[in-house]
Length: 484
Image (cartoon, rainbow, N blue to C red; front, top):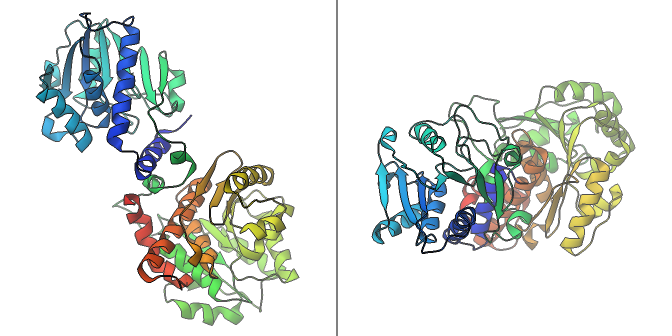
């Protein structure tokens, strides 16, 4: 099963791997044509089977334009809902123009009330794909009524128009399909439909799902009507023995889009941490290091934030580790746990939703196993994440991200990022993303963005990267990285 959102990411990742979208459309259209032939009893080019194609102006329609070419010999008629110049993608437009130039029977439907399907044997519903949800509007609503009014066998492309591919539900009218040709993998909502589902392999490589890519960034968005706080408030708990680590994490959280970032740290180092940036809000607590007496206050602070980034620069003082354990045992929100705080996690029973970001040495200290081979490490990390009950982002040349049931691998990044502090940046980016994304998605996107930022720094300047170089590179990697 794959959700509509994840399918869009995989499609974009496949393109980034070098599989042209046009090639995928060709395979999709061919798959639709095969099912049309199947439902007409294997009709060949000598048959006068009538096929009406009702096509929208997106890639769903583009799939159907391709299908028409594979149905030579059938009596096909393609009805385009809207003007040809409004077809929304280049590849769909090219396939439409191919039909026109080859003098297939194509008509433009400018008024849905004028749609005349006549009495076809098969109707291909290619109006809207999996990325469109909500009630059908015109001209699609009237076209759906016209399709449902025929006695034809209805073949839907990817999902019946008007049906939510993830839930199988519809708001208002939807196409009542007899067959659905869906691509790459079945969508969750299709099993609830009274239709035969055909899953077509269109040549998307497994790597498009295994490896993070620019498609994963499609999950990110910013509402133009946003207000302060809508994109998250992050509390970084760190510092004491080290001051740079919490500052890097806080700076990264801001660069990754959090609206407000506060740093809870020992008052002994508050001035030093504040000096890194005027953008930080400091909430110091008494003493030189984090101690159990500070936990009550931290829990009150944490309740006012969307996510806590716990660990950068805290050190491994016994009192500090006791405080970390007490905090996690009593906390029920979202937290990114990094650095020395990680060693406490396996021994704590917590209701919190945790993303743990160990490197391979820290993973071993937590009780997990690893391997130099990323394929073996992937299996080991997934198993340990399942035992732990939390999401793991295990850093390495290939990062492995898993919640115990789903796992992805990230390949961005370079040897220049072995310098200290890059993990603190990753923790901050992950914290910001956890404000708006699920833990698994947040961790996968953060790994991709952090590595891509590092790749761009090295590409521009060569090795000799320092962690602060990543901060300025994070926004462009996050918002411009979809074009990689």
